[in-house]
Length: 421
Ligand SMILES: [Zn+2]
Image (cartoon, rainbow, N blue to C red):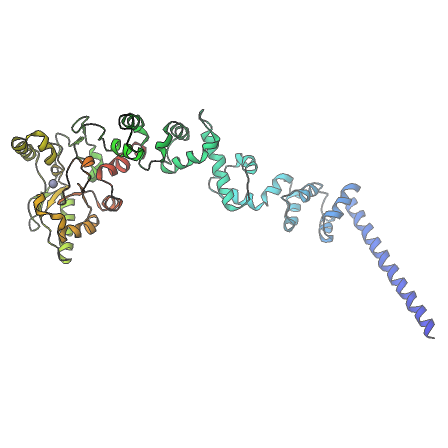
């Protein structure tokens, strides 16, 4: 009995296995048959069976033949999870290469960038590095900019980063001009305050002063001290407003005049109304901090300056007068933006007072700068005047006081730089 039973079990197993095998064969042949009927060749069907899952094969059976799906699946850009999308797009008539790009995450990042230009896609693809979002940004910029730079005959691919560094400073400059400047400016490019328009003067000054560093050369030429005082005088550009330069190279226009506001209650004289209001606020803030500020010598009329300069010349000669006083038209006191606070003589050593210390900490908040700092006579043309303050507006005053630049240096680079106009 037992033996018979075993025989029966074996028979059942064999039948079941045969059914499964037959079913599998039937299924396989049905898929091949159906794919064939959908329009795929025998060879394509073999490939499809090796590339796609059963579910995907079913999807292919249920659509008109799309042989390009094989091209897509074999591409290195292929992404399995987008199978349905690829198929849908193929059916809608899109080209395989375009579809692959549409679902490439790096290309999606490229296309989302505001600087992306569709006509350069091939170049972006050719310059792809690591496929990160950062790389997309870099690649777009590299391709876009090198095409613009390469319009210049002097273009050198190896100097791309140098062009970019210069462009970062002057973003509005023509790329061809950037290539030219980088090419001719040499080591001067590394100087923070390099102004291309002065390149010839830098080179001439350096030749006469071979011991000076390039930074010193740039500083000297930017502030005109490569030229003697009171030579090459220009009428100052009044459109600079509170940032006008008045010194031994820049003079006020002959017909200069300004509105004035009395400093009554805050010391002597008058200032231009905005400067006057700022000074009053500063005096009040100082009072609260326990320091006492008053206007000693603010606005001076042109005729007053003529008289005062002449007094110096008569007493000490022109050389000494030029050191201590300004020639008429060249005095900041004529602008209405400037005043001497508390004193105007070295002997009183204003720089040792708590008033001076407070001004150094706070004057910029009210738009004033120390105009003639210590040890900067070679640039400003004036010895240290701890009492002499100039209104330039709070924004510029803060930058000047915190940078340690003289107004001359600041004006040359930030206010009067031809590349920032
Ligand atoms: Zn003064």
